[in-house]
Length: 154
Picture 1: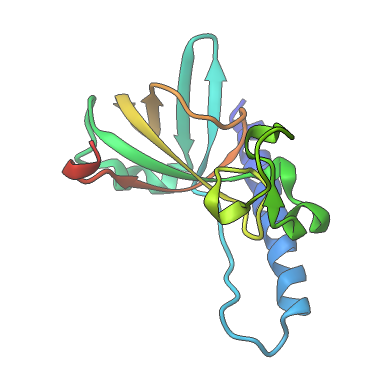
Picture 2: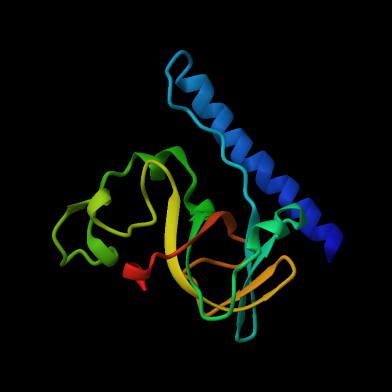
């Protein structure tokens, strides 16, 4: 299992690197191009939903406790195509009865940068594993970052 997770992390890093490399080639000479590296991934087993961090990021959970509210930033990896990134207007929730709306005014998974954001409640922290209440991401989805929610956001 550990070996497959290490392999998965390496593959995700290469995928993100490949996407970023393509962007670098396309935007050669332009500033503002960034490389992203996953810090972990989502796992869903039965009723449990967890974020499994790469072990080197375990020190970053110091102070995180059950009941904390966090923002999880993750990558819409299953939508990562040039065609999907080019879509700028959608019918919210995929319903053609909803008016055409710009992606920046929606939670659509298609957008120029495939960064997603979900507010979660921490149920438990065990080493490099954070158990959360739920997330609208698929299993093995790359996690980019985690931020504690401010009191006003709770």
